Image 1 (cartoon, rainbow, N blue to C red):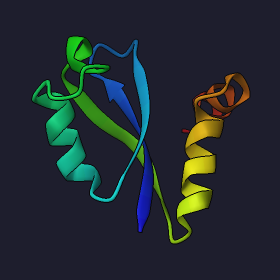
Image 2: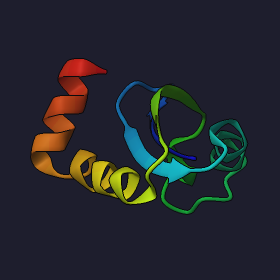
Image 3: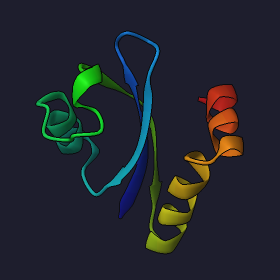
Length: 78
């Protein structure tokens, strides 16, 4: 099962969208500075995540959330 997740920096000004099999373990890596894209805005918390049984749908949803309209959707609904 794949999970698409949205992280929020505790400063409240930054968000990150990613995909993982184990979201809590991935959050630990983000907060430990092991992910270069998120290391400077630590610490992070999980804003929300969605589970998918179909891996291709999970990757499509992640791509959508990283688009302009997807960011607007996430801001409004999450």
